[in-house]
Length: 304
Image (cartoon, rainbow, N blue to C red; front, side):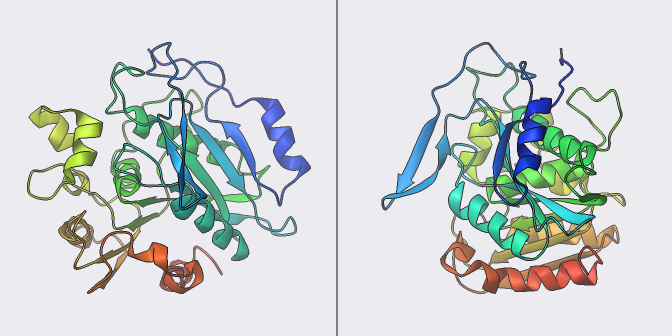
């Protein structure tokens, strides 16, 4: 049973008191759908003495970065960090990206989504997707207050976060959160960076599949979450990037998704690099590797 969720008004007021600074709001007020009344103890991860990310996430949040106040009707990107559905690389695949977006006049919303666990969810396979849909719903619902164009709200994901983003972009016709206002949960565009796309034996990242679907998923679950099988003419325009030598997530994930997009005449662009392995963009300045992305966004009239 899904409980109706309202965004707390006090959170909205906090955001508008400091538009240029980050604010973090709970994704749900009081009751989290598809949850068991048990909260994991969230763990903060550090790498080389720096904040890195989180694991054991049971309380999802949305961290908000808005560009200069004088800008209006800006595009927005909801960012899903990766981590094999076992952790979230929040700094490198979240914070650093959000700060680059606002420098280009784009609003950024980092989604700290629930990590699938049988101890906190009756159905762990749909928990992350519910959070992605709720994030899309919230950003669209409050677009006027955040100066966001409701027709230019995209979703971005890295690795397993790319699987979550592509799931949101191919399963928007199945709304898994309470939505009496019937607000669209379809992203207007997708940005997928070395994404896990498929749950098939040949292509999947085994750890991501195990964490999301368990040790012995049913054929129906494997089919539902193999997103290359669900591309159609309404799938949002998509930008993909990957390396040919990725030893963690096979580049064929991006290739089969691009092929499915192409056969359905969905506007898409893919950048493949010969070397760099998984996470290749994380060792580069964000402005450098995101430059082709911004050119694509301009070509799609997402940004001016």
